[in-house]
Every structure is written in C-alpha cells, then in structure tokens.
Length: 420
Image (spheres, rainbow, N blue to C red):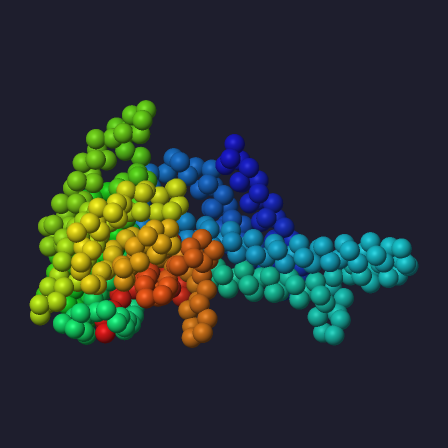
C-alpha cells in the first residue's frame, strides 16, 4: 500500500512538472521536444518501476549500483519537488489574482491569468517556472557532481591552546579520523591515498572516533592491510560508533526479543580487528600517555547518544575513574550530542572531546564566514570546533561515506590537531 501511494504521488509530480516543461519548450523544434520528453518519461518510468519491484531486486549483489541508483532516484525526486514548489507558487498567485479580478472586470481576468503574456520581457509565470527548473536542475546536477568527491580527502589543521597543557606536550600533533564506513568503499587504491595522506602528517598520536563499518565486520576484510599502516609514536586509539554494533542489519537468527548470536559474534570479530590493525580499542576506559615526565589522560567510551534512536552503551563514569589527578584529558566519544548532555555539564575537567557521526550530512556549504548544512537542523554541534569555557569539542566530518556515495561541499576529513 505504501508503495502504491508513493507511486501515485510520483506520477502526479511527474505529470505536473511535465505540463510546465511542455509550456516552456513550446517553441522548440518537434524533434528536440520528442527527444527531451522521451528521456524525461524514460527516467521517471525507471524510478517508478524500481520502486514497485525494489524488494525483489537482489541489492546485496549490486551494492555499488544500488548507491548510484538511490542517488539518481532521490536526486530526481527532490529536483522535481523543488520545481513543484515554484509551480504551486505561480498557480497560487494566479488563482489569487483571478479571484480578486473576478469582482472587477472580465478583461482584467483574462490579463491576470494569461501566463504567457510578456510583461517587461518575461511573464511572472515564465519567470517562476524557469527559476524552478533552474534550481531543480542545479540540485540534481550538484548531487551527481558530488559523486566525484567521495575520496577527495581534505586535511584540516587546527591549533588549540590550553593553559593547563603539560609542557612536554606543547606542539603535540594528533590526527583524528572518524566514520570510515568501509562497507561503502569500492576503490581500494583511492582509500590508500587517504591513508598515505594521514601518514604524511607525521602525527604523534592517531585517534579514531567510531563507525569502522556500516553493519558487518567482514566489510573490513579487504581493508585491514590498508588501515593497519596507520602508526604513530604514541599509538593509535579507537572507539565504537552506532554502526559498529550491527543494529541496522537484519540478522537471520533474530529471535522474538531481537537477540542474535550472529550479531554478538560480529561485534566480537570487529573488536578483534581493531587489535589486528594495531589499534587500542577503548571500551569505557582510559589510558595515560606519558612524555618527558608529563601526563595526559585519553578516555574512550562506547557509543553514547542523547537521541534514543542510537545506542547509549557508553559509560563515562567508568572511563573517567582513576584519571582525576591527570591534569589534561581528551575524550573519544562518537556522537557529539554526548558533549551537551553529559560531558560539558558533569565533567568540566575534560579539556577536549573528539567526535564524528554527523558526516556534515555529506552536503552543505563551507566558505569563509558562512557554514550551512541540513545537519545543523538535527545536531547543535555538527562539524568543526566548538567551545564552552575552557572545554573544546571537535566534530570530524568523516573519512568515509554512507548512503549517498558522494560529498557536496562537505569533503571527507583528516583532522590534524596541534596542542599548544
């Protein structure tokens, strides 16, 4: 039933947009109109057909094709939705004018509803329709262009000043990566370039803040020999993200209570992989790093989210216990909502929290003095650096990608943090 309703909505939108397109292209040659109209309905039919038979398509065998298909399908739908907004605005405008003029004179009615009449070169109807198609087409084109950015790794360097930083750690360089989502990768050589870029930063410490896979540990099988190349003098440390628990995969042995031995085994295998790569997985615990006689504490918790949709397995109290006397503390916690909900309010001596999770929605605009993404309507802290008093939070934009196999404006990130 839901598929039928969705198909009816899409057919209605397709028809509405087509009528406007036909008006805009009325002066085009019959040959070009036939070609454009055929392509339009062919693309629409493919999307609608795939919706009807979506559940019957063995997508697990065509995961890369599925990602590109979803990009095209959703991009096309949103482009048309934007066009419809402008068309509705135009039809609404004309309806209001028509009703208003109805009580004045018949000639005025004819003038008001004539959408093709030229007024100072272009009618309001023509302007709104062309603007709608321009914006809708730009949206689709932008999403398609973003496919080329999924491995376009961007190094962001920041210097953070802390008055209580131990002297031996002045100039200490940390590389943070997050949200690898290895199940989305299809180009091992491109990922290797990202790893080489990390190595070239020559960090003292490498930190990973969760979501190594999309669902299953075996997604990392082909990439263990890539990520195990990450090494640093003070080590590589990691924690878990919401996707690492396998909660989003339909394990075949689920019982009535949503318990699965396969899921448990999958998580244990994933934990073991961290060790095989030489990463120290911090599971609600801390470790003390020493340099030149000075110490800093590195805390790591399992996923902890203020959003009930995501796991809350982290135990910061357990990770914090025993670190009270260490003068400087860094926390690895995958979800940035943890900062406002607990870290900033209950653990004021945690100096720096590193998170990921949001990906910056893989879509947005970041230019000097202006930063925007749909992520900001979901997360208060969604990308980059945030501060409250002496405490800092840094939200990494993610190394990999999920769902949409691309990035628009929000590039995959390698963060280099220098402590001073």
